[in-house]
Image (cartoon, rainbow, N blue to C red; front, side, top):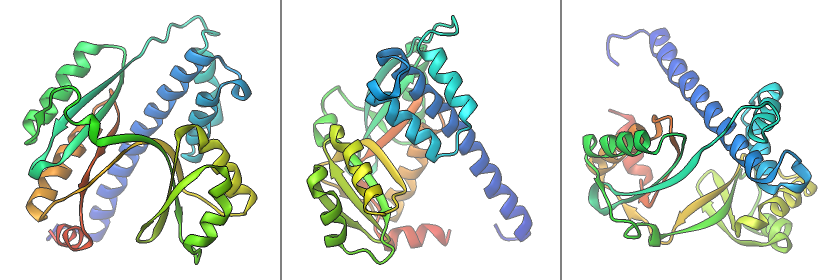
Length: 251
């Protein structure tokens, strides 16, 4: 960024954040529509919808947008919401693995765009099942440490179904079965512990550590996939050490 003013750099970063926020809103709305279509508009009787709405609210999606998405998904507006879930598997640099979760109203478009993004950015499409076995679907809650110890977290969430608490540097990460996620959220709230995100994710059973060159290529591939409208999530077993991340930030 040499030669650029600080303001130009800040504007560029803000534009990227705004762009990603808009994409994030669209993906969250799509999740709400699908959950409402599958289980109806009643949050109390539809855990999937309750989770999708909670996630959208935490990301500051406007209440009107959430309400419209619920009604649209449940068929209360006369519109037809018909999305298909597709999972693609890919190999990235240095033996890393990626799971690409799509939610689309056009399977051919999604397949074409995902394959193109992978091939143009140094990855290869993997055969079904050759990557997915490396991952397990888990409930994952991230929360800032804020002086809390591992024992503090465990005491709050163990009875709610938490399986483990991982140290992620500045954050704690709680893993559970996906069905136990609402109980863990409630336990944290009752204990007065703030959390940042709560998701159902594909968690890798083992991680692959990348060097600087591999990490650079991996991030380019992951970013290209996440930019696609049909891609909801990208999961990977790639591990970037603090040293590798620091090296990339200086570039």
